[in-house]
Structure formats: structure tokens, C-alpha cells
Image 1 (cartoon, rainbow, N blue to C red):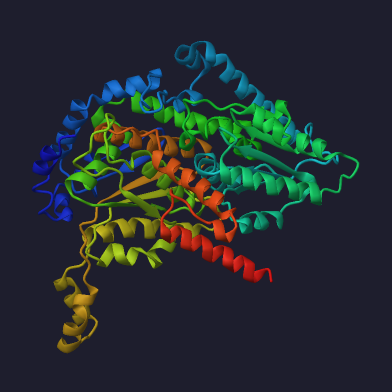
Image 2 (cartoon, rainbow, N blue to C red):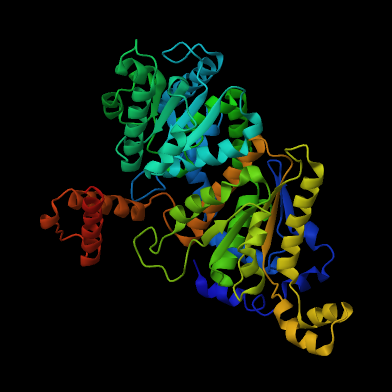
Length: 550
């Protein structure tokens, strides 16, 4: 990416007030568009038509159109792992699957049919617990990409959950997380889905092991063997059939994963089984249909009317041209409260890189620091910093126009707060305005002098506002696909591989070493792989265990 060109292009933007751009009374119409049922207002971004045109030129220079075609065609875009990037094909019609995947398409189609049959059978009671009862709870065990997509969709689509079935997700290896789940579950009527591509992920296997022991200890079905209970109550999504069956899971209850589906983009695969079990096949298919509609828009729309492309370029503008290091994700929907965490992973794990596809050091920064919280809670927390610190934090406001509850007055207030915050972040408040407000309130000159500067706000904070007509499976699918494609576009322009995560692997590697050292007697604790600091911490931990056991 030509960072010198970006720097030159942004000279005027760094000096102007964003609000001045609204001297153009048609700006709101020019800087907004619709796609797959979603509406994007980006008029509050600090950018002009000419500057945006310069970004489109950068996308053309990066051969973005060719990269989009290559991704959907199944070329090996993940060059370090020599894999295609084809999560999108999982939400495409079967004809498209066959065109892209060839002989492997039938295995994918068969897996989807098997998954749909499992969902129908569990919901109808044809598949039931060893005690003969219908399942009442679904417990999904996974971490990272095997967890976040399921979690965000489960919380977003609560109104679509089927009566009589509750969903739970377990990711954190902290034993307290499992204990919290056990307090809510009946072992006799709980169905477990373990999600692990290799069936070797440390956190997932540890959690699966203690859940297995809990179920066997708590089960009242004493007429059934332990193997019968696990075989009937447990499902797995994994490529490692041998490890899953060795754990006790019935081979017929194992659904496959594919190397060309990255974990953080895997909700559309059998990884989505826990979600489909709870919302049903019709709604799960609607989720995929919304994503497919965004896929079609992304492939077909020219850059100037392409929602993922525009959002991606605006993100690069804010990150690399204007120098803003963060991105706030603020969904003004309680049901979307898990979305900021999901986008932390998909964005930062994908594009948090410092070398290009060829291993060369980049001379610019890539992924922003993503954070957020549901509105209006964030207004009473970190948004104080957004308004009055010297930092400018670009923001995505996300809102469902239709309420999901019957409390219309609350929804009106929610919508008003969402729109007001984007306006306040853009406008700010000058010293003259603060002084005038205090004077109007009856403050004398001394009081005005004392308080006015404390009431100023910098403004000039750029934001997008994304509107969903309503929060349903279709619009959620479109929303998630929008961010997937945005991240892909940014990876293309930054020239990084958005689909590997070697930094995550280092933590796993050292985690195994730490566990190995911790297993040694106190006198033998040593490791060439670990620092003296970590060794001292291990000794302190083991010493405390010895003291607590006395």
C-alpha cells in the first residue's frame, strides 16, 4: 500500500472540522447506501468525494477485484498454510458448491443434510437422552473461532430460540466457568457439542473432560453404561475422528470441518450446529441466506456502491491516513452485546500483522484495536474518554430499527441515544459554546471561567451508522458477512494474510511448556524456554498450593 500517497491525500482532512463537510446539504444522500437489507450512513466520516475516489484508486492498484474473484473461486489465498478461503461457499446454493469444490462438494452437501436431520430429530424428540427424555439444554464447548460466532448468534437471536431448548457455551478454561454452567444444567437432559478441528485444543479438551465427568457423576440413568451416555448425549465437530471416538463420542455423531474454513469464519459450517439446534433449520438457513445476499453484493457492486469495500477503505483512511489507532463497535441492541468481542477476534486476529504476504516488514500499521460495548451502557463508561480525551476513536454504531421487545418508549430512547452520540462525537462543544450555555444558565463570570473549559468536547470523531430493519437471522447473517468482507478487503490493501494466526500458536506452544514445568517437583523446576520471571512465578504458585494443602 502506498502510504506516501495516503499521507498526501489526507493533508486537508487533518486540518478541517468534520462538521464543516455538512455545508453540502446533499452529503447524507451521497454518503449512504443499502445492501442485503442493511443501510450504511457514512456521512460522518472525515472524507470528501475526491479523497474517497483516491481510496478507490488504491483498491484498484491492489487488484482488489481480482482478489475477490480469487477468493470466491477457491484459490489458495492463505499462502502460509497453503489453503483456500472458502467459508463463503458454505452459504451458497449447491450448484455453486459443485462449481467451486468439485468432487468435495457432495461431502459438504451431505454434511449439511446430516446436520439438518440432527436438528430436526433433537427438536422433535426422535433423538433423546438415555433416560428417554427430550433434551432441554445444549452445551457447546469450544474456544476462539469455535466459540465466538456461535455465542454472538445465540444471544442475537433469542426471540428465535425454540421452546423447551436452552443454549449454553463454554470456552474459558477456568474451572469456575464450567461450575457456573453445571449449576444451570440437568445432566440427564443435556446434549453436548464439542467443537475442535484437531480435537487437541488444550482448553476445549480440559473442559470436555470435566463436563464428561460431571455428566457421568450426575446422571440418574444408572441402567446405562458410561459409554452409552456419552455416545447418546455427545456430538463433535472435528477432523480428528480417531481422537473424538477415543473420547467416547459415537462416530455417527461426528461432523467434519474443512481446512478451507478458518475458525473465526466457521459459523456457517457444522460449527453452527449448537445454534441450529436451538433456532431450527429454517432460521439457520435464513442466517446463511442473509450472508449470501451480502456475498452477492460484495462480488457484484462497483467499489463506489460496495458496502464492504467502502467500510474497509474508510477504516484504512482512519488508521493509516488520519492516524487513529482504535475502532469502537457500539451496537445499540442488547441482543448484539456479544458482537464487539466477536469482531475483536475476526478483525485483530485476522489483520494484526506486521509483515506482508512475502514476509517483508511493513512500513505502516494494520488492524486497529477493536473494543466496544452495547449502548447505552458504554455512554456511562468509556465514552467519556471518547468525548473529552485528546484521542479520536472512530466508531461503528449499529442499530435495529424495529424493536425486539414490547417496550416502545425504551426503544425510542435507545434510538435517540444512538443518533445523538454519533452527532455529539462529530460536533463536540467549543469553549464559546460552553461559555454561552453557562451564561444562559445564570452563571457569573467567575463561575464561567471556572467551568467552561471542563465542559468543552473536541468533536471531529468519525463514525458509521449501520441500520438493520430488524434483528432477525437474515439481517444478522448479512451483518456478519459485511464485516468478514471488510476485513478481507483491508487485508488485501495491507498486503497481509488475513487467514493465519501464528501469534495464537506461540501462546499454545509456551502454555504446554509451562504445564510441563509445573508438573516437576519444586527442586527440579527449570526450563531453557522460560524466563527467570516465569520460573519464579511457577515456584510461587506451587509453594502456595503446598501451603494451602497443609
